[in-house]
Amino acid sequence: MTELSFGEALALEGPTLLAWTLVPENDQREMAVISLEGNGAKQIAWTKHPESDVASVTEAYLAEGRVIGQYDDGTEMIWTVNEGDIKVWDTYQLWLWTDGDEVHLFSGRHYSRESIQLIFATASESSTSRELCGQLSGGKVVSLLEESAWWAVHDVTYSRDDLLYESAWTGVVGRLLAAWAGAEFEDRILG
Image (tube, rainbow, N blue to C red):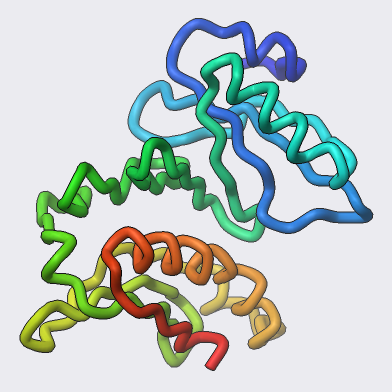
């Protein structure tokens, strides 16, 4: 696909959503047009807005019937909350979605809202993966969403600061899932 302007991307046929970057830079926040063609969510165009305009721009696009989400530019994670349901993609796949009273995973597993007692974010000792886990009634822990950072293995300069930057999505999505489930949230990455 050739590079599109923001306006051209908005006019495309096919499923798209809009997403704000998680963290502003220099009092500007980036908004991307995300294509949902195929399996994953791919950023196809973007523009920047002053942080002070985010609420009014969001309101205008919502009035047009657009779905608005967020993405973490430190990773490929994109998520939406639409009419109470949560969806989380990366560029390859829709990995997790809630539908009423169940959370569904790409793997085919699903869990009821009532069975989830705790959501927590964690990272591997080597910092090569970060994930959201759910602790179910009875104490069983299940992986809900995981992102691998293969580059961390080979980068001798990779630090805890890199891990924190690249795992910001776990805190946001983890809190959204915990609120949906009526459960507690623990960020075991931040400590």
